[in-house]
Image 1 (tube, rainbow, N blue to C red):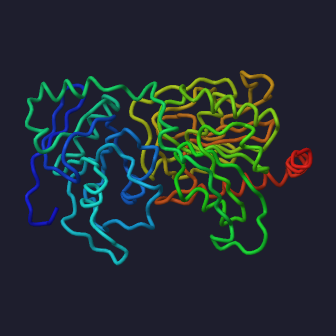
Image 2 (image 1 turned 90 degrees about the horizontal axis):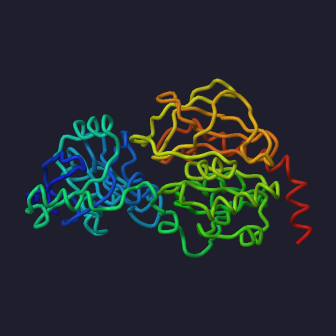
Image 3 (image 1 turned 135 degrees about the vertical axis):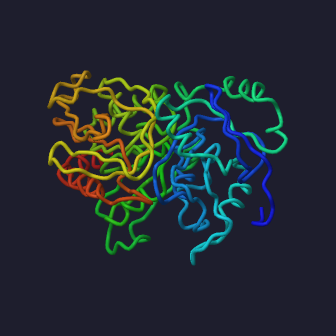
Length: 395
């Protein structure tokens, strides 16, 4: 849409009946999903292309969106995954030397319905007080229905609790990310199997930069398919949906843990490790989303500013080492906690080579405080090299 064209009216309707009126942004029509807010002051393109946002209507708390346009290099996956997009002041035109187009046009091209000109501060405060909830964005002809009719559409949709989405956003076929393509010279140091539950593109790049060959596998990959690539370690990515639905992945991870193959997980991978160890998970009132979330490493006492995007968390004790509910995995401890609300942000197993965090150490865009976690996993693989080598020789 050109800067001189007046956008059509649009309306945002929340599950509790709250209505916000604005103007169309991106594609016209109807978008249904869970309304959540993201607090990052930059990185809007990385946000909307993060698969963890599947089936969500994202409210950007930063007031000005679209200033730098869009470009192919900053995409975190093959497409935009947000179900709908909610902004206050949409840029009339981009201004950046890397820009290849406008955000408005890209949203329209990919069929993503949005709304602009609404009070995102008021929406954010509303969601923070009442929690993430079902919502709908309606523009053009869809916005002309009565508020009651629109609310009926909103409340009729399925909730996020119980949603199984990782398989919808994962790759269909395996692929490999080589260290030599990302500045590493010489032979790869290690090889890992990365299960794509909603993988962001920068994650395998961060491994590759450190000399690790990454075999990216679909979400439904079996233990046999994982070990077929002869990995030195296994990685479970971030992803959307309710971890309570991930029974397949939990069962597969338990076989990885039983084989004592080094494991590292982030976000959804952290929740799956929690379940594999025997802990429960639960839905957070409004979740953690943005690139400014403070987390404490309980082992060092250091505070990291982290990039996060999750609406569920692991229910585990926070008072030192204890026996995992699944006793065969020995002792475990909560390694990181959120300084905003004391939510579990990491797990570390003390008797098997497994750990996880609830945030994004690749942080694109975002802070790099947590990049050491990639190096820590590499150190674990190095320490357990004899185990991986034995596993390969047995094949």
